[in-house]
Length: 416
Image 1 (cartoon, one colour):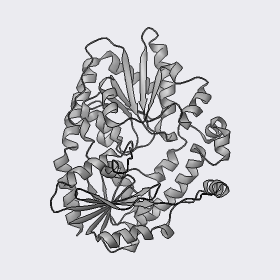
Image 2: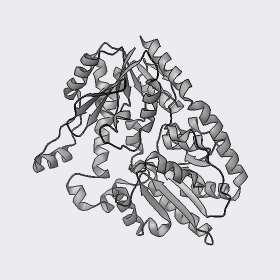
Image 3: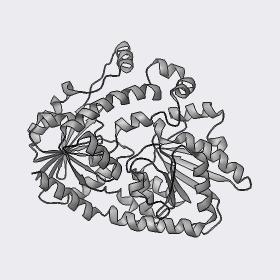
Image 4: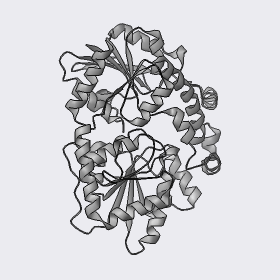
């Protein structure tokens, strides 16, 4: 069986490209397992920011596609302000790769990119592996921070040049409209939560939906979180991206509440994925008129898997404050480690975390409920430990690589 993937990551080709992407490591983990199947020949197409020739590693063919953008400064400025996105006019290079590789199955990762528009241009069966949903992100974009907040507190020079979160919102709106067309064209989807299944049933009512879980990065299968034996303080851990709807402002507000409740004991909150130079960091520090560091919040920036794993194992509770998500891999990694965790009732999260059994779920954007949940686990370490143990037990079953590869191969077989 010849299978062609269209992804937003080089997957295991990243080292060849001297690229170190943070996030999307689960696609590389999936590639590693699928490559072990002798009768599967895999091809992977992805976009790059420079010209790179196709290459082959072990038994996988990689097809990097260079997406050009204006070079002239004035044209760049116009480009950023007009917010053009790829559409049907840009898909011929992807169709050329299909003609070259001649797949039996095409697997498209996500509805967010232009890849899905190839579906109406080929007779080869295509399945979309749902990641998130831009249509819903559009509705949740300004949940925690208003458009006025972003305009007021962003760097004005960046705004004038067409950069930043305010401009990203308009890009997202255009991509969301493209996403609607992709849903309408596709006959097959795979997902893993009630949330993505229900959205698919509405946006693509005639399509067939398959359940398929995700393989987590291999480093997280071999380690297990344990309660600290020494009294070394209380540390919270979060891994999020710099999108405005990921709830970073909730962390800021919650940390202030916790400091008032625990004036005699310092609580440290570490955040991976966001650095002090990230735009949203600057924006929130201006809004709250104080710095993250002054409030005991450490912004660690993007971390590779090994370093992230070390930080998580040294922390006491994992927190995921997002306003919208499907099945965040950061939460799944925390569950696989057996960490006590608190997340929000958002998107597909209730499908992967059973409230009060595998973790605590709170309303998104509510720093008071989040602070209260943190205090519950801080005071009752036995309960926190039991939540983590239950989460680990479920995650080890859900993210079993052999099970997931069988799910995936069954999906591929049912489409041919």
